Image (tube, rainbow, N blue to C red; front, side):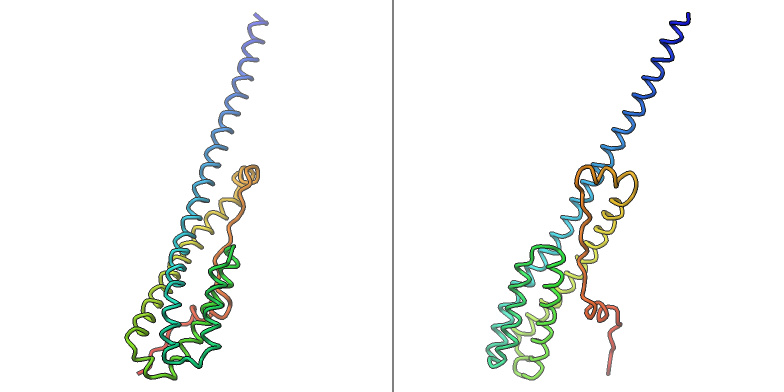
Amino acid sequence: MAAVSGLMIGLLCVGGVLVVVVIAVVMGVTIYNGLVNESIETKNAWSQIDVQLKRRYDLIPNLVETVKGYAGHEKETLERVIQARNMAMGAKSVAEQGQAENFLSGALKSLFAVSEAYPDLKANQNFLGLQEELTSTENRIGFARQHYNDVVGEYNATLMRFPANIVGGMFGFKPADFFQLDAAEAEAVKKAPQVKF
């Protein structure tokens, strides 16, 4: 009888340990799959930004050529825009892309400021159409950036929570970078537009 009791206790202990191991494995697999899903969602959100950035890059040469036809002696500004475009197209990381896009945005602002001095250019339908497309693309980039940063925030928060931080560390999951505006552009975005009549 004592042998049977001892055997039963031993089986219960082994069964209890087995249940704990199975629960830990199921939790680990669930957490791992969740991290994989969030990582893929982050990459997908970045690809949406990338699509809009490529659209922006495709518009810039046409814009520069149009401006060159009216304001060819503004060579320095035009070269700065092309240089900024090339730098942005060559960015490798999200942080580099953010810096390059900020530089490109500044160069484009300079280009549009130059256009103010040329009434014929400002009235050119091609220029107006390109300017409108670029503005629309900038808005799309802004929405895509917001979505990307939201997804990155969720992913990074998941990676920091217990026990996902252990599983993430074991399998090499790394936090994603946010796509950030520079301080000057961030302030410009925060300020409400002023309407003057």
